[in-house]
Structure formats: C-alpha cells, structure tokens
Amino acid sequence: MTATAARVGGMPTPMECLTLPAREHLPVRDTGGRPVLDVVIPVHNEEKDLEPCVLRLHAHLARTFPYGFRITVADNASTDRTPAIAARMAAELPGVRSVRLERKGRGRALGTVWSRSEAPVLAYMDVDLSTDLNALLPLVAPLISGHSDLAIGSRLAGGSRVVRGPKRELVSRTYNLILRGSLAARFSDAQCGFKAIRREVAERLLPMVEDTGWFFDTEMLVLAERAGLRIHEVPVDWVDDPDSTVHILRTAAEDLKGVWRVGRALAKGTLPLDRLARPFGDDPRDRAISGVPGGLARQLAGFCAVGALSTLLYLALYSAFRAGTGPQAANGAALLLSAVANTAANRRLTFGVRGRERAVRHQAQGLVVFAIGLALTSGSLAALAAATGSATGSAGASAGGAGHGTELAVLIAANLAATVLRFLLFRAWVFPDRRADDHTLGDAR
Image (tube, rainbow, N blue to C red; front, side, top):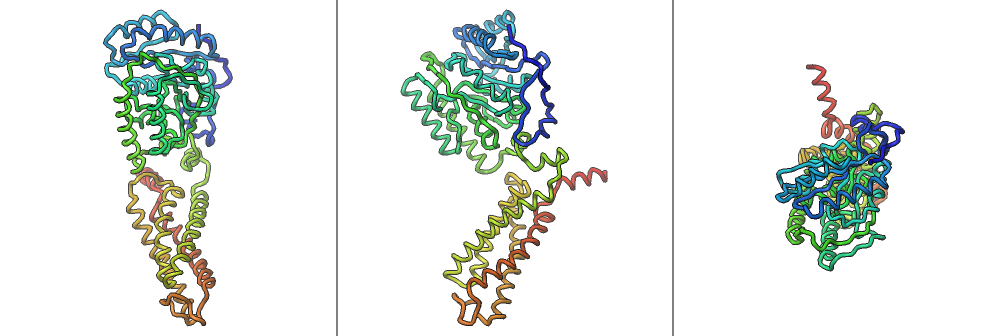
C-alpha cells in the first residue's frame, strides 16, 4: 500500500513559480491524490532483473516513504520478455505503471516519462539496484522541502562506500576529471544511476538537453549548474553489478563527444541558459513580470558597479602605458581596452543581454561611445597641456608642466562626465528595451 501525503498547503502553478522570491521554493504539499514521487526505471532487455528490482523498490517505498509514490518502468525497445513482465506487474501491483518506447536510449526514456509525469518530484535509478535504497529518502527530501532543484547520488563524495573493479573505478574518476577540467563541473559524480529533479525544473531543463543516451545525465547537470540551479549530492553505498550490460568503452566515447558538443556550445554562448535560470534565480526581468519596480534603478546600480571596475582597470592600464609613452597615447590605449571590457560587462550584467546575437554590433556601437569618451578625455588633456605649457607628445612631463597626479585628477573628472553620457547612449541606443517597443507596437495595433 502506498502512503498518503498530509495536507498542509498547495503546489504553486507555473505562473506562480515565475513570481516566487529569488532562490525560494514552496515545499511539496498535498497533490490531490497524485503521487509526490515518480521513480522511473529505464530498462532494455532486463527480463531477469526487472521483477526483483520493482518488488524490492516497491516494498522499500511503502515502508519508508511518507508520501504517495509511483514506480514507472520505461521499456526501451526491449526484444525479450521485459515488456510482458512490466505490463503484468503494472496490472498486479498498486502504484506501478509501464511505458513502452519503440526506440532505445536511456535519456530518451527519462525525458519522455519525466515530461509527462504529474508528480512534483521525479527520480530514476538503474534496474540492477547497485545503489543502496536507504539513500533514496535523503536524495529526494531536499527536493520535497524546496531546498534544492536537483539531487544526485555520488560514489565519489566523502562518506560513500563503493565496491567495484579497478577498471570501472579508473574510468569513472577519469571521466569526472575530464568534466572538471573541460566544463568546469563542480558536481562529483555525473554517471551514478541515482538522481532526482523537481518537476518545475524539469519542465524548463529537459527541452534544452539534446542527448538521448548515456550522456543525458551529464548534459542535464552541466546545464543546471551553469544556470545557477542548486544540485544536492548524497553519498551512496554502491556495489558494482558484475553482469552489467553497459559497454564501457562505447559509452565513454559517446560521452566524450557529448562533452565536446556541450563545451563548444557554452564557449559560443548559444545555450539560452537565462530561460532556465529565470524562474529559479534572481533575474531582473522577473521583477518586471511580478510588478516589482527596478528597471532604471537596477540598471544604474549595475552600470555604476561596472563603471567603477572599468575605471580602476583604465587607471591601471594608463599608468602602465604612461611609463613608456606620452599621455595621449597612453590614454587612447587604456581607454580602448577598458571600453571593450566595459561594453561586454554592461551588455551582460547591466542590460541582461545574453548570447552572441548582435554582440559584434553592440561592440561597434560601444566603440562609437568610446570615441566620444576619447574626445572628452583627450580634450581635457590638451586643455591641461595648454594651461601648463607642457609638451603632450613627450614621454615625460616638463619641469613646468603638470605632474602625473594632476593628469590623473583631470582624467577622472573628464571620465565622470563621459560616464553620464555613456550610460544615456547605452540605454537609449546600444541596449534599448525592445520589450517596451514591442508593447508600444502592440498597443498601436
């Protein structure tokens, strides 16, 4: 018999999820008779292990899980008796169902079942049950409470106890080292067949995952981590199945192809991670949706922060260049380099523009703004030179000319004036609010 969930509150709707405070989730409550947890077991030709696995898992959940649950057997185009066994168990055992897919692929099975499930927490585990089931409740508890977005079992985390051969141990650790070195992954175990995810997260994450095979797990975790979602790790006790049908070398080769594909997409900025992070993180556009003010004020704060860092970069560059050249050349080189960095930072942080679209155009427009700033600062230096009688083209100031400190003070004042103009040009010309234009056009129509 399955346990029932105590009624304490209601689940948020998708639109309510968009307006939740940053980094806060509502815990899972009463789901109106639906299961709170849906555990998927992807299988392909597992007629030997399927029934013992389902019976053992069902007994464990009925004994230890305090909410309603369901076990879904996702058959991946099996050619043996697996589909018949799954169908019979679904008919005989409460809380068990069977789903048949005509094409192979663990990732395809998980994506299909998870995307159709109504349970607020989705999980999966391998049919061999190599992972001790006592880790299941610690795995899903942070998702039920709303503390985390995803959860993974880890054979490499501190406190885990693992029994497996040296070959698999070497492959596993090498693969995770590759992930850390190439994709900057911080999770410790990508391929342990013991994971869970909140449904509201899966709804936005799964459409972005391309792989339908064994790399599905890794791609899902990398995208989630890059989007700033919270991944909870649970140390597990794990005993290797000596009869496993997984082809290690073939799987490793496919995984490396996936690492290359995802790494290239991340480097090019073609993954719309803001679509994933937006409902769960502190995105300024969420405040616009929820009616919370913060457009101009937030942009000003971001622009000032970027500007302060850019000014420090500019002064450091100017001082470095000034040691070997005149003030005009040093000013031009320092301003050019800092302007490129300033435009890129404001594009991403101040005005929330992501991806590579219009990036070249934005930099070109930023260089126009740079030229205006160069005219202001160079003009100020020329005025200073005229006032003090120094030769601006010389490598050092003359005896009667302005000192280095005076030059810096004049440049700071000129940059403050240029900064105000730069913000106005950025906001109105380089990074205009196209959503406002769209609303205006819509109203006109």
